[in-house]
Length: 103
Image 1 (cartoon, rainbow, N blue to C red):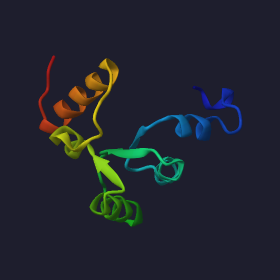
Image 2: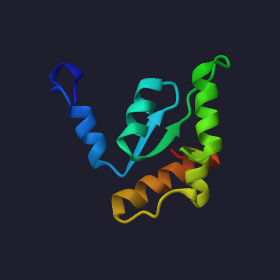
Image 3: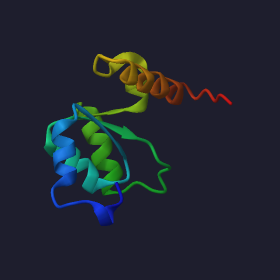
C-alpha cells in the first residue's frame, strides 16, 4: 500500500489482524508497532554496519523471546502453520536460514 494512499490508522489495523508479523531488524519504529500490536514478531536480517541501540535492542528481544529470527523459524521454532500460504512462507524462511540458493 503506497504511503500516500494509506489512511490514518491503517497500519495499526493491519497489525491487529495479523497473528505473525515479519519486520526488517533495522526499523525500530516498525518493530515497536508490531510488538505493541500483540502479534508474534519475526525479524528479517539486514547487514549490520555497526553495533548500536537498535542492534542491541533486537539482540536483547531475541534473547528474551520477544522476537524470533529467520534462523529460529527455519529450525522449527515458529508458530505452527495452518494453511498453504503459511507453509510456503515457512519453507522460504527455512531456505533463507539454511543459506541455500536456488535459481
